[in-house]
Each structure stands twice: as structure tokens, then as C-alpha cells.
Amino acid sequence: MTKNIAVIGGDGIGVEITAEAIKILNKIAAKYNREFGFTHVLMGGIAIDETGVPLPEETVKVCKASDAVLLGAVGGPKWDKGAGHLRPEAGLLGIRSALGLFANLRPVRLFDVLADACVLKNPGKIDLIIVRELIGGAYFGRRETYKDEAEARTAYDTMLYRDWEIERIAKVAFKLAQKRSGSVCSVDKANVLDSSRLWREVVWETFGKGDYSGITLSDMLVDNCAMQLVRDPSQFDVIVTENLFGDILSDEASVLTGSLGMLPSASLSESGAGMYEPCHGSAPDIAGQDKANPLAMILSAAMMLRLSFDMDSEAAAIESAVERVLAKGLRTGDIYRGTEPAQAIPPLGGESSPERLVGCIEMGDAVAAEICFS
Ligand code: IPM
Ligand code: MG
View (cartoon, protein in one colour):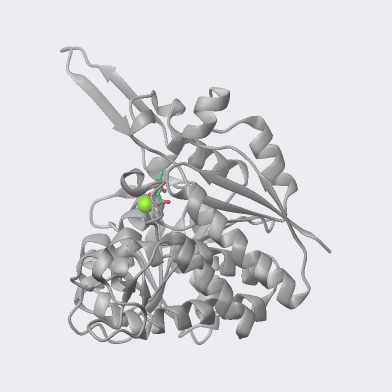
């Protein structure tokens, strides 16, 4: 049966990296006798240009009717001046909310071959996952910009959580931990924020109510967590946290994998809808130059196969193809550690550098080729 996938290329490098993910999925389809259908839809800056809004109705309709959504990235300086609801990012938040994608899973795994690209000197084993609540907190709370009585420009955002929103994301984290090393660290700012005190209370209540034997639960304040992530990331298995903290911590954690360009993600709803997107943005500075790292997008497609389509072997085939390509020394600029200028880099296997700087398309081709021969 055909799996219908809505594809939102979006802005900047989004279009380039989604093209590579589709290339890989077509290889998988051929090798494993699967059928994937792709419907391209507009969102973000390009949607503003073409339809006047960042999230056209049609896009929501197609995404809801699809088996999964693949999303590149949205945003860019061209649309930065618009009012909040007319910015590309409003499209992203809108689709997350329209599809009920409350659970954002961001796996942070350092491939052995990229140990040199990790920002830490002795990284050890890094294999953690950030479970970020995605449709609550300050991103969706009441907000306002106005002039107060003294004519001072004033603005506020509200970080609001209801108990059921905390409970459902905590359950996702506990269930994930049961399939992994079994420890959950809940991250909050309970020494200051009311919403965090409720968060902590509900996380523990949920833990107590369910059958989560074999799992350990601990709490950590978000400022400490930011520090512990770079001090000793190997202490973490599953980190569960609210929307804004998860956004910040996942960018921080991404460089443990070598680059933000390596971090995939899955956003899931209660009803089973899934959207798969890299954690990085649209990188307008390198857009259209064949310089983007497509691996986070390709690894997001692998997550889609595993989590939305139950295609475990296919997902594993992509992941090991990525690992082999990296082991052969292919590197996009963000994970390249050579010092030579691009033109002077010897081909793969050359003497002065085992690494070879490649573009987005060549990286995609190399992963596709590895899938063919695996
Ligand atoms: C992310 C991004 C988005 C977010 C932006 C683009 C709105 O940073 O997915 O992490 O803050 O959620
Ligand atoms: Mg972010």
C-alpha cells in the first residue's frame, strides 16, 4: 500500500535537503518493494510570497490526509520584519498545533566516526534523547505587546501548562525509557517558575500511577542541565522538558553530535500523526549553494519509516548507510575538520586528509549508493 507523504520543502536549504531525503526514500522503495507517494505543499516564507499566509489551508488539509509529513525548514531574513502571525515560523507553530504534535523527539547520538567533530575533548558515549513538549508553554501562551501607562514599550509571553499536557508528555518519555537504558531526567526551573513546580509534581504523579518498573526518574534544573550536557553528556538517557527549555537544550546538545546538521527529529500526536524535520533552521547564508548537510533530514526520514510506518529494517538501512558514508570520510562543511581550501582537498582516500568536503547533493548520492549495496 502506498504511503502518502506530504513534503514541505519550505525556505532556504529546506528545499535542497528534502530533495535528498526523497532520493533516499526512492532508493528504499526500490530495494524493499515499498511505495511512497510525495505531495509537495507550501509553508513558511515561500507560502507568504505565493499565498499571503505562512500556513495555507490547503497545506493543513494535505498534511492531515497524509500518512506522514516531511519538513525541511522555514524562515529567512526576507520575512523577518513581518508581524508575528505573518512570519514563516508562525506556519511551523501552526502546523504543529493543527496536527496536535505534542511530543518532539530529538535523538542526540554521536557517531564514533564523528568523535573528532564533537565539541568535547573526550566525549565518551553520547546517546541521549530529548523529549520536548511541543505545543504548550510560552510558544502558545497568551502574549501581548503594548505601551504601558508611562508609555514604555512593554511585552509579555505566558508560560502556561495544564496537568494533562504534562502527563501525556511524561508518559511518552517513560515509555521511551523502557525501550532504552531506562532513566528519565525531567528538566524544569522549579526553583523559580510556577509552571515548573506543576511540571515536577505531575511528572512524579504520572510516574507513580503507571507501571514503569525498571525506570529511574530524576529532576534537574534547566540551568544545571545546560551545564551537565557539556560537562558529562553520558549521564543522560531520556531528557523530558517543556517547549522552550527543549528548544534551547536541543540546540546545545546538537553540537555534541558534531553539528546541528546531524540532529533529526520526530513530532508525534496522540492520534498517530507524525511530522519529521531536522532540528536546524533554513540557513539562508548557504541556501542554494549546495553546501547544506542533508544528514539530519535523511535521518529524520529514517525516523519516519520506523515510527510512522513500522519499517524498522528500512530505517536501520538508512542509518547504517549514513554511518558508512561518514566512515568513508565524506563531510559537508559543518562537520569537515580539514584545513585545506575546498578545491585542494584530495579525493577520498587521498594522503593528506581522510576527510573529503562534499556538497549536499553528493552527500545524498553517497547515502543512496550505500543503500543500494547494503
Ligand atoms: C526548532 C526551531 C523552531 C522552534 C523555530 C524555527 C520556530 O528552533 O524546531 O527547534 O523554536 O521550535
Ligand atoms: Mg530550535
